[in-house]
Length: 123
Image (tube, rainbow, N blue to C red; front, side, top):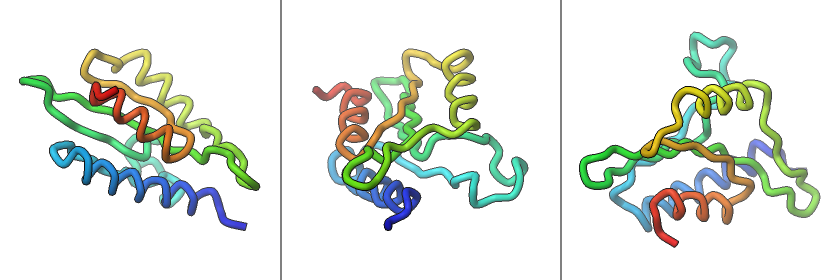
């Protein structure tokens, strides 16, 4: 059986390729998964999203924080947010959501692409 982490890594790689091909002006980066570290000092922000995208609209810097989860197809269960991810999202929603900064959770590649298109205002 394929591990969810491997599926999420594959989704992340495919999304990175898609963004770099379709929106070369967007800066996209991945974050280090906290499960690879032993403590908060090495992570900085527990629960931060898998991807962070940056673009400029006129003179405004726009940011999308996007968490990737498995879609739950076949034998793979739909991914769930962990405790730190739930807390991070809540903190972001309370203190940092702005017209130029948003976050989302995407279940699978297609949903990730849809959310990125919406963020970029392409429909």
